[in-house]
Image 1 (cartoon, rainbow, N blue to C red):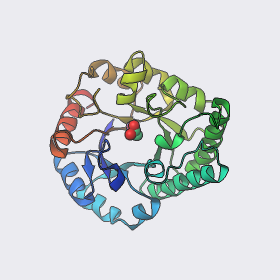
Image 2: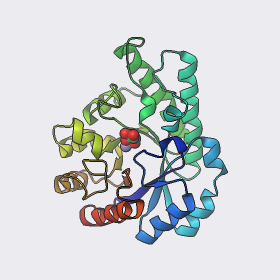
Image 3: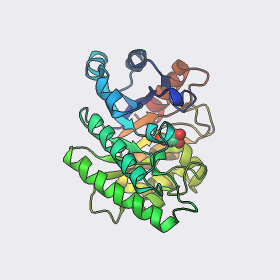
Length: 271
Ligand code: LER
Ligand code: MN
């Protein structure tokens, strides 16, 4: 069974980012629970912040799970990436992710690597950057396994990375790893830009598929753009996908409308 989740950001620098709820964790949990979501996905400034939150109490009070924890603050706030030319910056990036992984694992939640994959450029060529990324994913994947969790790797559209843009490239990146604990995150917004068909991309991900960012073509809530969900739902069913469909959407016109449209879309297409 697919479970529903909705994003909450506590990162001041990501106020304008594609997260449904911003700033107030308790209000977000209350709304998510009232609307019937199974879980929240948390975007926090650091592991220390996650560890200082009354997360356990809020999740149990509102009957929610933690679907995943994002690591993008490492990039947004500190400009860290796993493919930086400077080895000490790469190390800092990996340690930032590692700590968020530990914080999430306390709640059974995997960490997500999206923007922290960085990009190749004049200073680090494609092969070198791919090697840096693969080595880091391998170490982090082993760590995830030791923590009893997995790590989600997210291909992004071409305007956000040049590492992996499609699910097929993601599979090629992950297949040589000695760990099976790194999975793919399929974000429908990025896939709408990069894949020949979104359902084809999901089938390419196949057994690597671990998490879905459930959103419309314009990064608004499901139903607010021109995405065709019927073949997407069919592809997810054919994969027996049983992870989260998490709303990573702009709160347009506001968080409550976005959350309501998402849960309606979730019930229509994925339940
Ligand atoms: C991260 O999940 C992602 O999809 C990024 O594009 C957000 O900016
Ligand atoms: Mn995403």
